[in-house]
Length: 454
Image 1 (cartoon, helix red, strand yellow):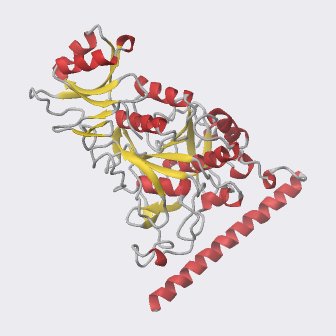
Image 2 (cartoon, one colour):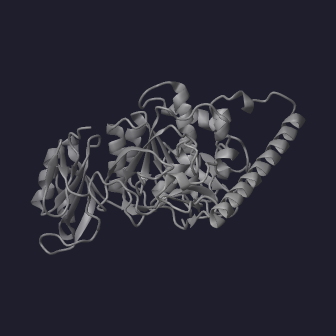
Image 3 (cartoon, helix red, strand yellow):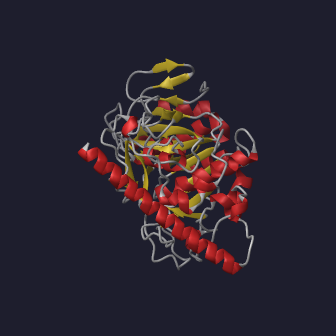
């Protein structure tokens, strides 16, 4: 793709390539040293009457520098001297100025390496264990449907994705952080790779399998190697997905502050037909029975974003999950096995894990629409809501638990008998699932013993 207008400017030196002007990424500090020696602030600058070129001149005139310019949005990100902010706000060519606040992966994300899945030689794909779906994939029925996400593009806006993982296939991506150059979207944290595996780890007989194993995963690195970032980098990722016709935009991250600039970007992407999904946050709840509790983070609270809360394996609301009136769907989120960096597998919990389950099902539904590119976001969103399974019976689940079988119209999810028959079938299905899981664990243990003593 040729980027017609986006500029990534940082520090000293400028590289020019295929219409893209930039360095390794954006400036990473909100209070850094400006050329004049004073502290600098990182802000969004909106032009009056859409005259973007004039705003660029204003930023330069007050001793600032432009960090981001976008393809699809009429505002810029700039670093300006703190003592010039009032001058910038008062300029007749500037509509308004807004702080570029921080975003990050949800708090309390602490993965543990999976003893069951990790191979004796991480670098040798042939030693990776036989593939098995996580309990979450089985719980939502994603392992029992025919659609696999083929032809659907999914943007994982996160810490990047490890591109050479034996259980992942990365279609491409972009880096908008200061950790590496624009084409360096490698994950050196682990969060983005874990999220990607949940959404779309391929069905290749190794390790884990995702909800939509044939979806095209794009590593859109908007969080640095420490798991933190800024709204400007998130917006740059949304902008890139729009310019590249990436249909689904999955965001397992959140910020504490609201941002009208971020809202503008979300609304523009939604209007262009993209489906945006986001983790609700890991700020906790009082049990999920109160609809007055508001602990969600941004941008999950936006109406144009599908906000996802998390549940435990026993179908209860996870204690860490944020809740609020903007919740749309519930998904598995606790102790979920997926991919991680260094060609390994990890078990992790959080609404950031729950979000890609919904993203994956959205990809399955999108595939059934047989439409190429952005467009059917509202119909897909309606299907996800209408097909959801009521589990909690409270506002904490929104429309309910995402259900892959019902969402893609699988006849096995329809009501074909009496309520008693359904209950009996559900019991035996659940018992079968437990027995299959125990068999998998036993097989893994035997395989581990064989390798240990061979």
